[in-house]
Image (cartoon, rainbow, N blue to C red):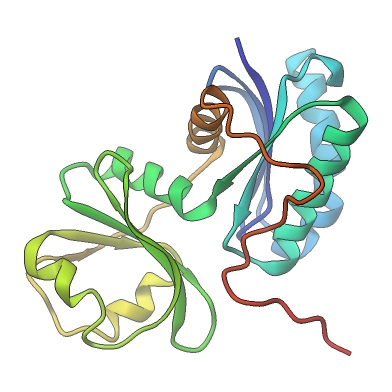
Amino acid sequence: MALILHIDTALQQANVGIADDGIPLVNIQNEDQYSHAAFVQPAIQEALRQSNMSIDSIDAVGVTAGPGSYTGLRVAMASAKGLCYALNKPLLAVNTLEVMAAAAIEKFPGFDLYCPMIDARRNEVYTSLYTSSLEVSMPVTALILEKTSFEKALANATVLYFGNGSIKFKNTIEPHAKAFFEEVAYDGAHLAKCLLKSFKHNDFQDLAYAEPLYVKDFYLGK
């Protein structure tokens, strides 16, 4: 049995909850992206209350490390690292795009490739490609979208595009018989499954060096 507390504030919808061997016991959500920082700690306490558990019973703490909102990524990582230091528990970190892909594969099976896209402003997205078995086909990248983007992939495979950045590509690409677009949202259940896989592989983060996956450099304004 692996009890994992998850903290996800990467995108607009935040998730905080507890899962037992990848099965959510409780998942609390927040839809206001600008209040994620204030949401996390009360949500952790509420998740513990609803699951009738003490914080000491948790086996690990997991986060979506990015890509995503720079502020949101820092909120989750700082909260998780603080708990791990205090409780002497391991830290897990999964890629936001992988969790998105897991949700899409479950909801829309049958495509050759799955392409999650997170809006990175202007005509740029954070993206990657996954197979139907959630294997990485293209690593995470910050991509400026063009009509020829994913030309090689579409020559040989059906591709499902989704996420809040996919509308940009839909408006950029010429209609293509192998390009499909759908709305997909992940939740605590998809995150829990991805974190459990990392836990079973002992894929723990070094608390001293763990950082969000920004993809692009982050700059603080003056």
